[in-house]
Image 1 (cartoon, rainbow, N blue to C red):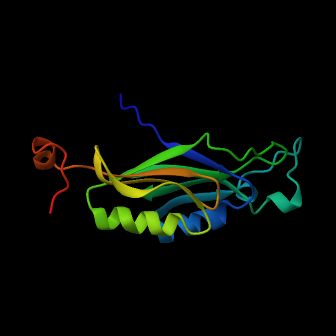
Image 2 (cartoon, rainbow, N blue to C red):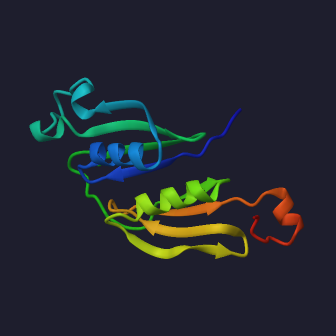
Length: 152
């Protein structure tokens, strides 16, 4: 049996915008997307007309990881917070820098991109949708052997 952990991002009516943003800024591929209107309607619980275009479930593939994203189900309360935190791990400082620069646009830098003892390039950014990302550059085995020093 395989166990897989996926981050699930709940949005406040802007999941389609978030999907487009992550496709551009994180090179994400959209694997699946279904709106509430695509699902069979339950006559006992009809959807409000303005909810039918909202995303019920989508799957984005970013690198080797799948992330699920959806709008809150109509009638449920959305809470913006830092309860979802995603760690993006790369092995290239240039890629880390790209993610950092794009995700911080209209967002908030929690910790600026810098070298730390466990990574040659590390940052924490909350993007314009309120999602917090730790952006981490993994050290090579060689760098670990040399005492975690940045490779040239």
